[in-house]
Amino acid sequence: MRTIAAIVCFLMASVCGQTCGTRRIVMSDNDDTIFCQGSVQRADGNLAGIDEQWTLNLLSGFVAYPGIGQFLTELSRGPNDATPEPVILNSARPRELCTLSLCIDTTDEKFTDVMAGTGGSWSSTVLYGQAADQACPSTTCRYENLGETKARNQAEFRANNTGEYDYIWVGDNGQGDVKAAVDMLSSADSCVKAAFINDVVNSPARDDVDSDDILAVDTSAYSNIYFYRNTAHAAMMAKDNNFISLAGMRRILDAIRRTKQYQDCSTTCSCACPFCCSADGCQADDSGVAPGCKTLQPDVVAAEAQYANLVANANNNQGSTTSTTTGSTTGLSAGGGGNGAVTPIPPAVVTPLPPQVVIPSDGAIALSCMWPLFVLALATLLL
View (cartoon, rainbow, N blue to C red):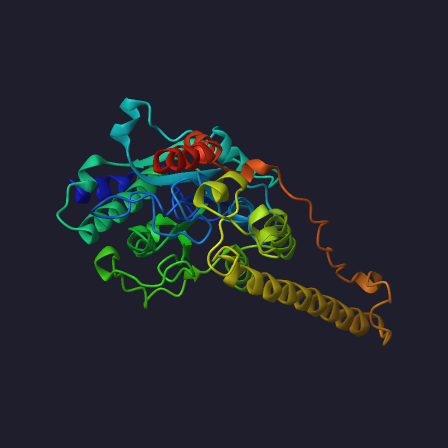
């Protein structure tokens, strides 16, 4: 059936005369890609993901990766800063859950907060997995099914939607998204130009990796699959390979700096118990900071240096061109704006985002408020 569906998708695209290129659609996974919630697990595998670098317990709720909404938006804008297309979620969640009112709602607060202030938006279209994908005796088998379904979703969406689009796939390597990337990129008709994969297998929050829970996929033949540590690292690779503009890179770095997670990296938070941690959003390991800070802080520094170098190079190139054209040897003016120079976009004033960037679940809030009662009750029993 899958082979027949693929043939139908190919024929529909051919008949409609669809071509790639003038506009870009970004498709993204959800868990471990947009939201870090790897503490939600099940006995025979990871239901919602494996990454815990920004959320260390079940009470943390939905914690978005710093700057991920801006990164998705800039990928859609592309190197020429075009108007971004709405980002489409391509999820492993079985469509059958919609009958239980468990569909993904991109108008929900946790999603709208991710896109707030980015200039981008979520598509009302959500692509789902199927329950049959989960009917597999092993975790790796299940992940392979999930990857194949996501690739097929992209092919069917492209076949059913006219317009000259290319696509970028954003996912993680905790489940089947790398398999999806390889399947998408192996088909020229998919118009998928690149895949950005959040490397949660090597997350700073993971001390060991159970190989039975990882789907090994050979990506050596694909130079356009980019594994990233965090959104600052992803932004550097995206700019290096001309997927985003210089201004877009600046906007991503500013978005990261505004998040509570990044700002907490510069402070040592002390949490006496897991309930206290979830109440104020402080997710600290033994070092006093979230594990994600170990890579995010140095990568932001590196990205800022790359941005400054790119601005300087652009100015030097424009200065050389002006000198050649006019015979001038003056170069750039002291103000950085003479002779057509690129004026660097200064880092935005860092203003913390509203507290809803980290959204504890209702249960988390209730438990965080009630823990003193638990201690008092226990003391009463002991006495």
